[in-house]
Image 1 (cartoon, helix red, strand yellow):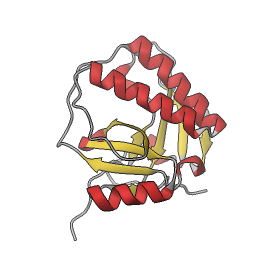
Image 2 (cartoon, one colour):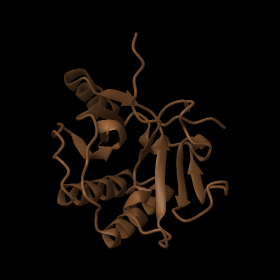
Image 3 (cartoon, helix red, strand yellow):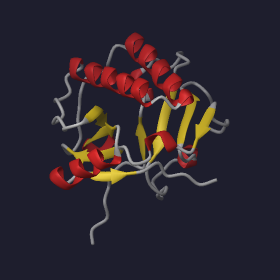
Image 4 (spheres, helix red, strand yellow):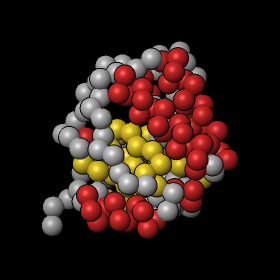
Length: 176
């Protein structure tokens, strides 16, 4: 059976590359599988993690949770080999990243979906290809390795999407 090369981590916020080095924007990542050999040492945090973009990678995260708010609600759909688009508006990314961090701290799925949709809009404005829509999806956006991340309110909707589209159901990977 071939190994899936889907991302180890998915950025719920904008990526660190989208912000200038001097910005202190919260970056929110969710681990979705066991770390692999090609994962950087600072990426061993599990669950959902918030850290500042300009902090040293060996510093502890600002916030970490087990990711329960996303359990049964995420899917990754292979959409391209790798999506290339120009840099996004860093001011807008800063604003949205703060919203993502706030939503994660509050475990507020509707607020998180709103922020993810805002990121998708920024990606489209920067030249990304539109992702296929999904019935009952609250939000979606491009993530690494040519995948789209889809968020659903209910596990049943996520599972139906995966069955119909061939998407991968993923869960927050968390180790205490």
